[in-house]
Length: 278
Image (tube, rainbow, N blue to C red):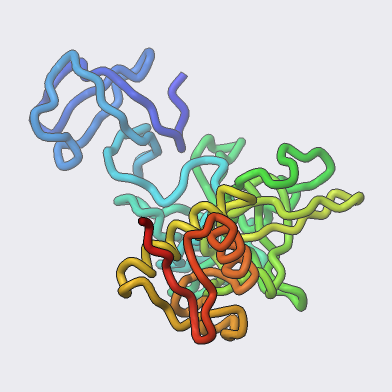
């Protein structure tokens, strides 16, 4: 069964003046001419996104929406009505968020975090701001040091509340953030700690030795590009280190320690020196 709000790979069954008809498993779905890839022929398959058009018909597109059913995404409000608001979905048609699914009255130009879902009554794809019931830490699907996808939800007194893999809630402490971030940003990160009550602390970037290997390689490359010397050391400020290397001071010191043990650098009074191989 073809479901709205998802990607499907469908076969072209016939060509018409205004586009192509695709095999929708029991019904024909139109792929409008403007979205037909060059050279696509009858009998071939094409990956499309399925949604309802303004006349409530299922229709296909090769456009890429800003999210599919099940995704939590940041979308901009493009218009407001008495029944709800419309959000820029990245498609020809905007995504509707009913008034009942809004936390507060929305305004045009505002960006909000929403969950994309299928309305049970209409079968149409819609959006809701009231999605916390779909997230929880009662049963975890991740463990410490797992790499995860992070979505910044809101700023708190301790750091940033984040959604983990669109399933769980975690906290990214201010001390672990070394670049400007804002609500709606998506980051790659890892689970730093899971507490007895299943509350999770997360960090941006990669975990463990894989992270250090990545950063040590970056330091060696920067040394090589600067005649083997850089004026940074363990007394440099965290801001200076992050501004040049894009890493925290803790990670920088760990990477320096690894390179020193490998005898790839020497620590001199005013910086770090690349050791020349004989």
